[in-house]
Image (tube, rainbow, N blue to C red; front, side, top):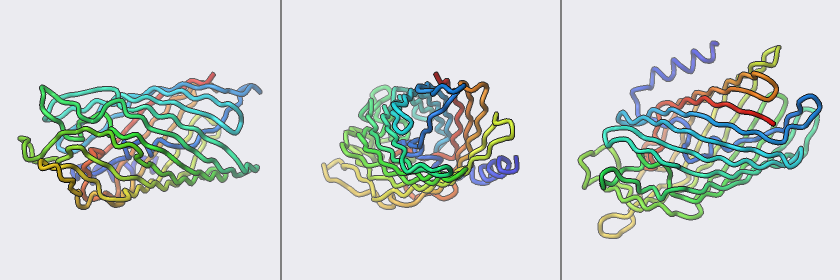
Length: 301
């Protein structure tokens, strides 16, 4: 309870600042998975769906949803599939579309009684080219349902008792972003130009600890997440020249708390809250958040 109150107080103190919650690019959700055993029967499948609320810049709010499926091929290897739907609402209007598809594999190795290593690999496939419009008017990246990039995802996780330590890399491989927003042709001066936007890679470092109640019904998992954007992003100006967006590289630190309640051995509900502690100066990719909260349901079978 003290940890929850502390996170809420931090959020209230920075709520008026422009800041990022967790990275919508997908790397924050690129995490390890473990197999489950119920009544001596291995659970090989699970489905989960959730709702995500986000508070962005200039009164932009986000209502997002996702649907996921996971299959364990063995005690060591599993694959998961996730599809997202993203809606943005603000001064430009309201727009919602399917966002991305994530395909992720996890391989567990070097397992002992208290520890194990897990390698992860995957891809993010955009379902739009990040050039959605309202009444024919181009929209900044804050309103786009996807970044419009085909990404490769790589990660390594070390589990020790109740601790998890993770490092992940999200690498844009194909830049298919076709955004056409120019700040100089817009009635708003709140967002940078992102015409034919090109995004650089993200490197994530995360540490977490899992608290489990005596009856094993509740678990609480505080996370500290550091994300380094490895370079400055760029766009193409009205003369067709590619321009670097200064100060768009840099470091972000997020605090995240995940709470889970097991209804039965096969049903659970999860809630999470993420807030920023340190942010990079310029975020043209539209991932600016002051708050992200999520509720989800999982069924194992």
